[in-house]
Image (cartoon, rainbow, N blue to C red):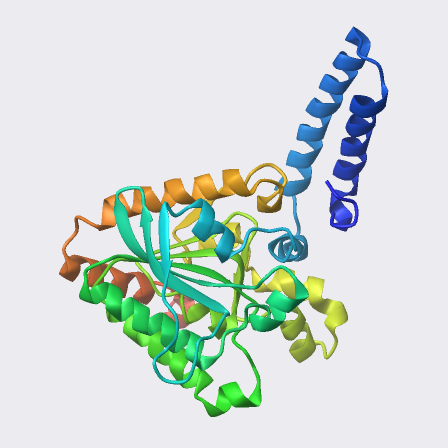
Length: 331
């Protein structure tokens, strides 16, 4: 683990890894050295598991934003057996913050659509750090409609802090096009699988987030607003971002319990940024399993189930006494 890229709470993990590396590089081969390395590796696995099983909400955000975390482009390469990219919205331009194209995952042909953040500063600037413009969402919808025409399932990979907030984006109908995407996805006559692979922020995530199955990688988050944005509104300061993160209940475990998502995809020990291959394998296995379930179903059944799924969200219980007040004279 690179110390420059490790997060603050990963320090105990980094220190153990350093000790193991030093022993492997400098100490002569011996039974004692081998046993010590074996014990340190066991200790490393235990500490890593403890750290990542007890992440706070804000620490989860830090993991979701890790610079080494796999992006959509990585999954297109590692999950898909074939991928042919499609560009442009046939209206304004080609938004590089959205990748889309035909793909093959084992025996299934799918339409892959996902947010792309980029790695280098040049790539991130071209992708606007994963913040899509209206033309990106129009591109996504055009490709979804193409998939529906040929009865190909749609897979969306969500990884964005939010839709691009600039004046040009607003002038070209940012809010309207996100709302249109949500409406069209709700009735699109092909199976849709949505997976939050990192950040799932605000309407930028919802523009690709209406589907028959919604899943999250274990250490991702999915929220109506970023913790910094929430802290800025409620407390007028980003210093309260950790408090806001806890209050928003946007981690995968919370959202599964609340019924917002259907499934949690486990990440490798230490997070997805530690092992792109294993994370991709877990994602691929999940997609194949869900496709195997959805593809044989009739479209009328899928659309009705999708409708009911979202109608169930947000249900809460009221105090029975406030709904049916006691009659006068009753105890």
